[in-house]
Image (cartoon, rainbow, N blue to C red):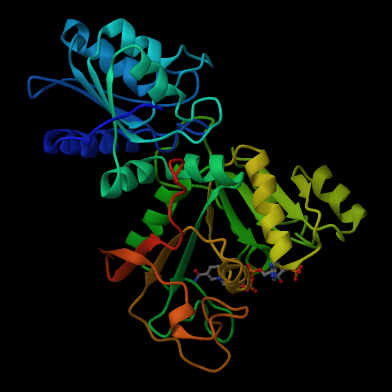
Length: 382
Ligand SMILES: NC(=O)c1ccc[n+]([C@@H]2O[C@H](COP(=O)([O-])OP(=O)(O)OC[C@H]3O[C@@H](n4cnc5c(N)ncnc54)[C@H](OP(=O)(O)O)[C@@H]3O)[C@@H](O)[C@H]2O)c1
């Protein structure tokens, strides 16, 4: 790889714009990365593009096509290293060279073996000036493709843990009543997230207690892009009469069961229409690690885990949560028997407790959303 120099202030601003463009692919782009690209010449933007999904043009050729002849001698700013391989579409490096682009600013390197550093090397070898962003610019670019980068680096999806809790941290009353702790605006946001993710998961306790559908409702979902509905069910005890199995819905259901699951129950779930993946482990953190690996093998790059508290606590204890999406509602549930949002072992010292770095805090109706990362997006340059 032979990149030199740093992006100029103007290029850093264009990278922010490219990240905004990349976000337009969220919900349709997987298993490809969300990528955005901007072409500028003489301080003027002449082309913009983003990648919308497998088989469709990549962000760079879209921006090049929009720029037309103006691409010659121009600067291309892209969130992710241009690909150098022929997949479902041709290599972006070739499209960049054919267009006569003079300078390329790369936000983040691609971690996949076939591209890592290769896109930069090919462009630089052909005489293109290549600059790779660093620091906060690179972090922003990695964030734009966070699900893909997490999956590519670890083989598991990016895990977003969503919980809705009262002011005193409870997720149900002592009698098990949960509807509704959060208000309609927060619930609508959850449906938006479901539409954007590759999978939505709950623990078997929640599947039994709430009998959820786990579909995205009252939001646009691209046809064929409905999130896989997942139950984390070590003993394969999902009732055959569950709404997940009997109510019609476009999205498939996957039960992830443990090594000790009763084969007859597994067969019954399959006969009822569920897909079943078995992990090597029977229970505990290894079961959860195996479940995420199973999702990764299915090219699930993002999963919204919607609890319950046992699974939430186990994921936090195992350090398997990438993003927290915590809704706090202005209600006090109280009582010794009302379940808290995260069970399990928990932190011994406050200093060791998982803490969101630079949380985004947003008001959703009367509720407050606290959202942010517990784990950084993997960096292929590291
Ligand atoms: N307010 C909210 O945001 C929210 C969200 C979800 C749920 N809830 C409420 O929470 C309650 C259900 O919570 P819950 O804690 O009982 O259920 P849960 O967390 O959904 O599921 C617990 C079950 O998951 C299985 N499991 C999978 N991996 C595990 C691991 N590593 N460690 C331990 N267990 C694992 C176990 O099944 P086995 O027992 O078969 O081993 C366990 O009993 C309901 O009242 C529901 O309404 C509230």
